[in-house]
Length: 228
Image (cartoon, rainbow, N blue to C red):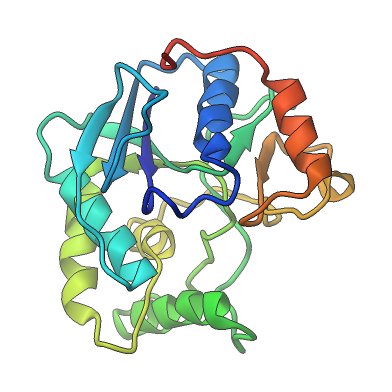
């Protein structure tokens, strides 16, 4: 298993970059991880033996993510098959997971906030390409990706952007390649009591609550082999 993390600016974390530290610990404890790649403008000093795809970023978050991913999939040192991660994705041992992709249901018909609008934009773009009922793959879970398919997806997505339009890679990729998967609730939770027992995945808000921070540090207290 090869993990690829999209990492923002060095000072972006509100939890002193403990997100990626414990995300890696959780994945390494749960899965046979072979390699880790980080694509972004910096590399955390507490990590070692991690491949870094250095990418400068600008003020537009969603454009940054697409550009970071484009640099990664065009890098010969990045494995052909990888799991796309964010730094706040965590995975527990149980229940076991078959590594099918996850989707939340259809893309939103009436977006209620900026994040939903980025998913809606992606769904409308997919409909114009002939995909009638696009699914929403933005459920904050690790996603298996093929590098060549990601290259094709990005080559089509990026020219379609305009200054006001943001789109989501996972939803574009999942629908363009008809990857299917398991329907799954959004894994981003504010409190632990809403983490369903039938899901191994947890994602957090920008600054996790003390309850979640304590849970994460107590659940994965030991360094992974990728830490100094």
